[in-house]
Length: 154
Length: 382
Image (cartoon, rainbow over all chains, first blue to last red; front, side):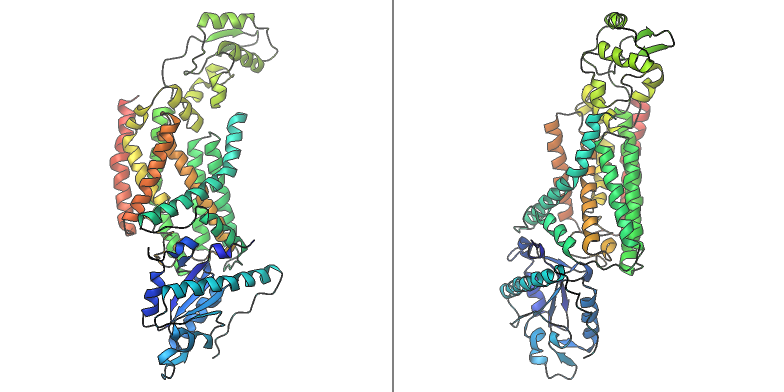
């Protein structure tokens, strides 16, 4: 029996988001949605987190930060890209300073669409990520090697 | 320490983390309700800890996990000692030692966030430690000494080798009169050694179940001339509970300790890591310098820190109980619950303060409420 499903701790990072999706992520914590009902906690520390939630497209300064945060998270871990910018780069994808979606830097497990993504969609995405987290946990338990840290190449 | 107290201590070692986890779950639900949310299930803290045990750990320094093992061991040791009715001073110092190990663990990875957390934890210890010791001294002055009528004239038994003076503890209701005692003593067969003699005589003189044995008093069955002073004047939890109950102290105990009790409530907020004093690390969603003390701990080590914290909370609730120990157990339990509720209320109603304000406020409270109460007890309540 795995307890990841009962106690997912999130780390939320804003990689150049317009704050639309950020507000919706935080709205999940408010009395209306109250994700703590499911044991979901918004932690500010990568070393305590299981799920990395990223909003906004990735640009040159935030790329390093994303990699740093991801590599500091202990295994097993999953990445959720929230909003269309995080998924593909959105309307900013052709801008000279934007690299694109989160998957240009990290292996993304779940994409949550929307501009801004609705809290219901975010909760759905996190729940979907939990299934993947369980699979990864089971693989680690079965003796699979820890995935290597993601290097900083584009 | 007799077997009953030893057993209570051992049970506490197992039960404290379970109760502490339930208390934390209850805390989270109550906090959520105060914020207009539904909140997690009652067992959520256990789910969190079990999950952390499944997580891989990341440790920067070789020593950081070792320090946490020491932290948990010392905190569990303090909790076990407390519930085994042992010396309250030793309990406080074991708890402090555990706290110091936690700080050392936070210092060892050399991370800036963790270091800030460790320094703040040291400041917190600086703020609460004097009041904690004053609370111990207050409890000692009120209930750590002989209460009630002086014991009946001690029976004297001549064993041929030495004169053994026997005394019943002050609260013993089954105490026989001095003449009866002497009679029963003389009728008892003369045993071979002093120890056996005194044991059998106490059993004869104080009734079938000597209350001193229930309370784990060291004086039970030992020559009174030597141990009376030690028996009636000590810092043991067992002595305090015994004197509070048998001495019929009731509300008087709380009244005599009112200043110290209020001061203790103040530092309890620091010790339970509640707002406005959750400077070193916090359980809340809002962060303070990332996660302070626990920033560099992950996986199993973080789970152990949480378990150590549960031990600590149960120990502190036990400490609060001591102030109410003269009352009926049901009333005392209700009051302890009320104290915890108050802490949660304060936690949710206040924002985090600066450490300067914390140290100033804690020491002013310690001086005004704690020291003045102590002086009152020392000069007027002897």
